[in-house]
Amino acid sequence: MEKTLSIIKPDGVSKGLIGEVIRRFEKNGIKIAAMRMLWLTKKEAEGFYAVHKSKKFFESLTTFMSSGPIVVMVLEGENVIAKNRELMGATNYLEAKEGTIRKDFATDIEKNIVHGSDAPETAVSEIKYFFCDLDIV
Ligand code: ATP
Ligand code: MG
Image (cartoon, rainbow, N blue to C red; front, side):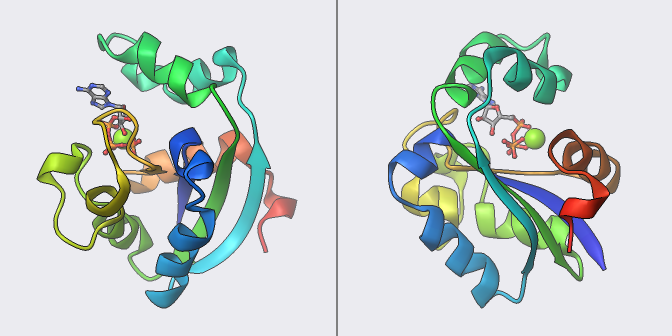
């Protein structure tokens, strides 16, 4: 079974969408294998998004990601990396397909409700950033 990291970003939490996002995962046969709420420091957000360090949106993105509580989850299922990204929709909510989380709830290319790992290697390293083996059921 494949695993991936999902984050409900500060805008998703403050809009009251924790239950809605989890409902969509469960309705689509995705299993929650670990889950935790936390509030990232700016440094922790910078560490998580280190791959985007050179991007012009890095400063704003990491300020946003440390602006309030987030929910981090390990999702498990067949093909779950791709499945999760399909449920999330395109990074830019204006390009996201109907019925996706970002199409339905995002208001901004940066404040786009959820994060999902984009490949098996990033899934492994992103899960490790938040969870130890014992946390994952
Ligand atoms: P995520 O990594 O959060 O799952 P993604 O893989 O769809 O989203 P990335 O290209 O990895 O998108 O960008 C990471 C995050 O950076 C985006 O989700 C968004 O919050 C922010 N971001 C990406 N592009 C831009 C941009 N052009 N302007 C502002 N913020 C952006
Ligand atoms: Mg990404």
